[in-house]
Every structure is written in structure tokens, then in C-alpha cells.
Length: 452
Image (cartoon, rainbow, N blue to C red; front, top):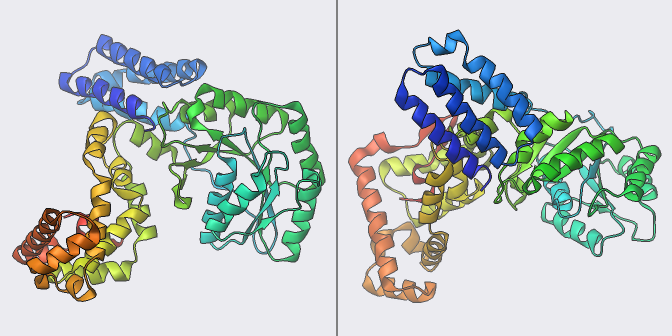
């Protein structure tokens, strides 16, 4: 998982600082030396680390900190603020034209960075915000590139403009702009050819596309797992073509996260979005302050609230809350709550955003979550009749045996699920109104999130 090792190290460093209470200058210098090593091991550019540490040290050893009531917490805040500043401080949005004007986005990147799937994810995001996107297939070199784009775009119901592999990409881009204007599309994304490495001929092709059509923004898609190489790639594209923003992919993978911390400082261009998974909704807006909070193990509650608001229907959540208060919920409600949790990225995704859940502690919790068990639970519930799901009191032994056979599980699993369900209902009756949903950012979240 991204930043797991870095987050773990930071939490240990700061835990030791908090224990000491009053800090000496030597204590701060020793802690910051560990911070420096942690950043270098996370594959953050040496030049970036050097500048970062100079700024932190100047502020952390100041008189206000050393004589403060809680110098440990003040040092942590300084590191957090500097991390945020390193990644850009403010969130940067895509600049899109208003009305029916077509905004042309040229998507660039090396092969394997996930550019084509990112095009589809970004199109889905724009579509959900009322835009009408179109993707142009400008990669005519890689085998099956057009087909891959069509498959990815079909998943999010976004059309693809293509002219086959015989037409040159600058001509395709020019025709796509005309088609977009004539058919009411207001965002056109040019999915250009990837490269195995920085390639002069393909760089020239990107320049030709810019000469043929008026490109509003050039977006570089970079694989976060490539570490410092991502910074080198960004610098090369900025020098040859010019980039307006960066999308970091695979930030959920086994990466040390150095690219996210280096790329803004190295090439001066903002990170717009980060890819945190395979699903279309896993392309997240990049918030420097929230990423800093995640790295330092302080969670990201704001993103969690926004995910809940985007994926949970408030009216339905209120209905479920009323059922929970009266202990009148059935297995259909349980299934729905599991589905809502899936839409939010699953339990692992939710855990990552909770304070104190970074590093090895998160790994241990994730290991304890048995996703296959959740699938078996779903199979058990789906093997019940509608009447049984609505009224769990009907579940006698013979019905449980039939359900177990239908779900392909042992009868003991059915008994455990039914027992847990009964216990949850008893708990609801016992506490009544005290255990309804809780207000979070104007939305009521259903109890349990799919887990009793």
C-alpha cells in the first residue's frame, strides 16, 4: 500500500517525541534526521529532501517551538505543513470552458502508466459532474490500443472517436475536434500513444497535434510506482511539450510514494488526481493537505465523508436508520448496507482514511478482514427466499439446511450469521434511539456499514 512504510516510520518518530514532553535541540535534530532517512527510503528526490529538511529544521528549532507547551506536537505540525507545501498547498482543478465550448485535453504518458484506463476514469468523473465527454483514440501504434480504449470507455458509457490505424494521430485529433463541436460534446480527451521511454519521434508527434488543434490542457499520466523515474519523466515532458497537470496512478499499489512528494517540487506542476484502484470511481481529486495527513497517520476524514455523501442515498439512509432504531431491519437491509460499503471502496478503503490507521497497524487490520467470508455471507442471504430475508424469525433448522445447500456452505456458517443478526437486533432494541445513524457532514450513515 502507498506510503505504508513511510507512514509507519513517521508515526514511530513522532511517538517518541511525544513521550519526551520537553525537547532539547538535539532531540529535534535526531528526530529530523530520522525524517530525512524515511523520506529518502521512500524514494523522494534527494534535492527535494534537502530543501524540505532545511525549511523544517529552521522552523522546528526556533525559540517559539522549543519553549512551547508541547514542542513535540508543534514539530509534527511543522512537518505536516511543509509536506502539504511540498505537494502544492492548494488543490488544483481542471480548467474547463463553459457552455458548449469544447475543452481539449491531451493525455500523455509512458506505456504501462495506465493512461488509457485513466482517460475512461476521468471521463466518468467529468460525466458525473454534468459534462459530455468524448475520447479520441490517437494511439495507432500499440496493438489493440483502440480496442482497449473502447472497452474501458464502454464501462462508463462514454463514446470513443476513432479512425483506425491508418490515419495519423494529428489528423485524428483534428477530425475529433470537428466531430465534438458538431455533436454537442464539451470535453474532448485525446488518448495519445504511450512510450516505453522518452522517444523523440513521438514527442514530435505530440507537438504536431498541438499545432493542428488548440489544446487547452496537457495532462501527464505517471505511474507512482516508478518513484524518482516519474520525476524524470515529468521533467522531460515539461521541457519538450509543456504540461499543465499530472495524474498519478497506482498510488494504492506497493509503492514508497516518492513520486507524490517529489513531482510538484521538481517540475512545478500540480497533481490533479490520483488513481487509488481499478474501478472508475477510484480516481480521486488530489488534496495536498489530506495526503499529508494520510502520510503522517492522521487519517483523511474529509475524503471519507465525501465518499459517503457521493455513494449513499440520504433518503434511503434515513429509512434504514428508522428501521435500525426500531430493530425492524431484515437481511435485505443488511445486503444493501454491504453494497453501500462496496461503493465506498470496501472496508480496507474506509480503514485507510481513519486517524491512526497507517503503516503496520492498518496491515494487521486488513489481514483480519476476510473478503471471501463477506462473499459467502452474501451467498447465504441470496439463498434465502424474499419472505425469509424480510422476516428472519422464519429461519428454522430445515430452512437453514436448504439455505446452506443453496449457498454451498456448511450449516454452521448459516447458524453463525443468523445468531449475529439476532444479537444485533437485540442490541438495537436495548439501546433504541441511541444507536441510530450519526450525523456526519449533513448525511446519516447507516449503522454497521455492512458489518455487525
